[in-house]
Length: 121
Image (tube, rainbow, N blue to C red; front, side, top):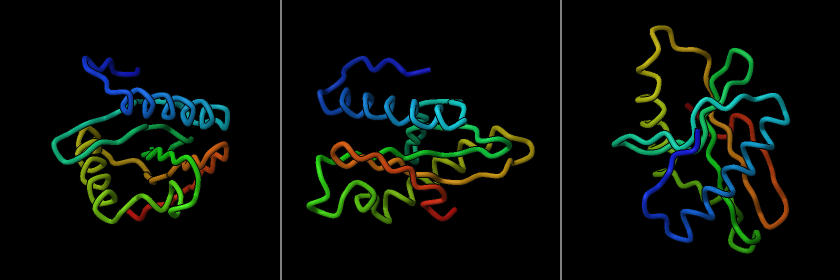
């Protein structure tokens, strides 16, 4: 399910590693991975997962520490708009749109926080 990137920068490789950490954490809490790194012209969604009947769009953010606001604070309004566009494109494949939410997995140093319903949709 993880896409193979032809040319990965060290930053992209590190980002994908943190996405896998986040995915494993969510799977331990009962979520099921549907797709990783969904990309469209309008944006990208790190993880698309299922939580019961709900479809969960997950943004994974990592920072070394919280000195500059932390991982969760790094999700700007522009990033939220791109996530919303990508989610709308993703949902076009469904005849009947399931319940949805945006979660954030914020990793600051060794601290992982799962923020449910973190972004309005």
